[in-house]
Image (cartoon, rainbow, N blue to C red; front, side):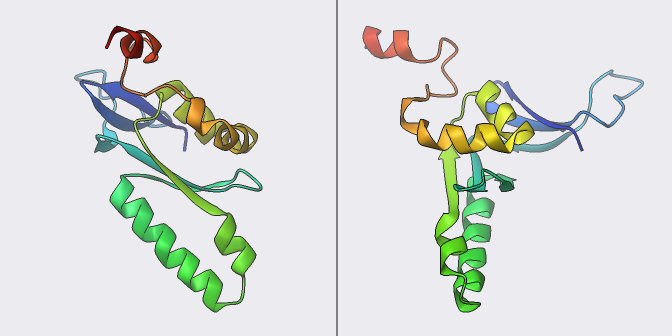
Length: 128
């Protein structure tokens, strides 16, 4: 699967680019539509485990941490991180495509611009 998020009308749409577009409309069907995106990954390795709607990902992560701790794998449970909110689309897609990038982005998450501001948010914060 070649997954990619796109931001349209304030919502994130997840597309599988390996699917062929519709012969009638020329558009691909989206797999997910959500107002914010959550990504669950291992902060040590950068491997993404799940991504999608925040409620589902938070639930999945809590259940997975519980199972890992019950199995005695406390370190793996602590390494499982969920980041949700309005991601910049290009940063989100780079995380899906590269685990190295995902690990690096976790270190600079506080400096990322708000994902739904078209100019990266810096100008809008100054204007307010």
